[in-house]
Image 1 (cartoon, rainbow, N blue to C red):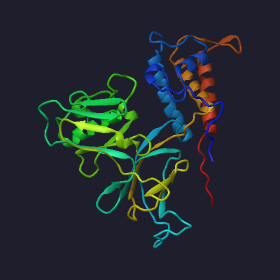
Image 2: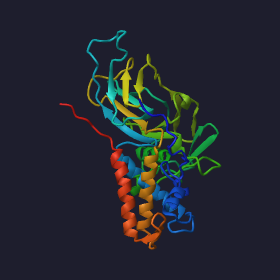
Image 3: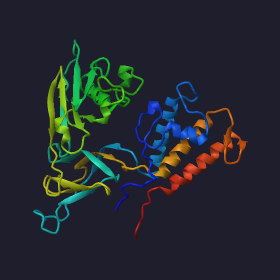
Image 4: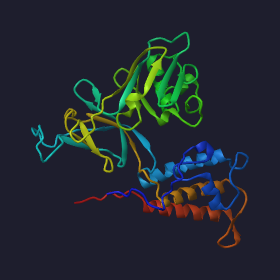
Length: 358
C-alpha cells in the first residue's frame, strides 16, 4: 500500500528550469529560505542559473535516496525470463501468469516498450510506435520530419535538428537524439555539436517534443528510427508522423495490457507478469524501457532540495547572509555547512533499504 497524497506535499510543480522551477523546488523557495531578494535575470546567480542548480540537486536527491519523485525514463533494461512452472500453460484458475520479471526500479508510471525475444527478433508488446526508415545516401534538398500530438506539432529539420552527411545509421541516431532532446554523444565528434538538442512545439517555447515522444534506433538494422508515444495506454495511436524523405510507418498500438491480456503489472512494486505473448525462456529475452517515479513530492524532499540549492548559492556568493532566528550574521561557510548537513540528514533518512534474509 502506498500513500496517494499528503496535505504537506509540495504541489507547486510546473517544471521549467530556465525559469527557475523544478519538480522538487523553485527559485522563490530558495530565496525565501535565504531571506534575500527574489532571483531575476539580472541577479547573481540569475534565475536560469538557479534553475540549473535545482536540476543538479534533484539528480543528487534521486541518487542518494535510491529512487525518484519525478518521472524518469529508464532505457533498455534487460531481464531473463523463467516460467513459473514448466508445462503449466494454460494457467489454471489459481494462477493468471506464466512468469514475471522484477524491474530494477519501483513506482512504474508507464511501460514505454516491453520487447520480448521470440526467436528471431524483439517484439514490442507496449505503447504506440512509429518508424522512420532513413535512406542510404545524403539528401541534396531539405528534409523535415513532423510529429503531431493533440494540438501540438513538432518539426525536425535537416541541418538544424539533425544531419545526414555520415550515413543512415548516424543519421538515425541524430534523429533519435533530437526527439529525446539529449546531447548527441555518439555523433557530436562528427557534427561539431556542443549542446543538447531542443525541439519545441510550433508556436510555443514551453512544450517540448521529449514530453510526448521517446525514440531509439532499431537494434537490429540501425538505420530506422523507432518512435514511441509517452501518452497513457493506447492514446498514442492518435499521434501522427510525416517525413518528406524516407519511408514512414504510422503510429500503431500493440498494447494488450490487462489481467487477461499479454501482460499486466504491479507498478508500485515494479513487477511485470506475462500471460499470453511471453518471451523465450532464456537470459536477456526481455528488454524494457519505462517511466518510473513517485507521483507525489513529500515535504521532506522539497525541504532537502531547497537546502541543497541554497547551499550552492551561498558557496558562490561573497556576502554574509542574515539569519533571522539569531538576529546575527554568520559566516558563509557555517551557513553552507548547516544547510548541507540538514539536507543530507533528511535524504539519509529517506534512503531505500534492502533487507537480506538468511
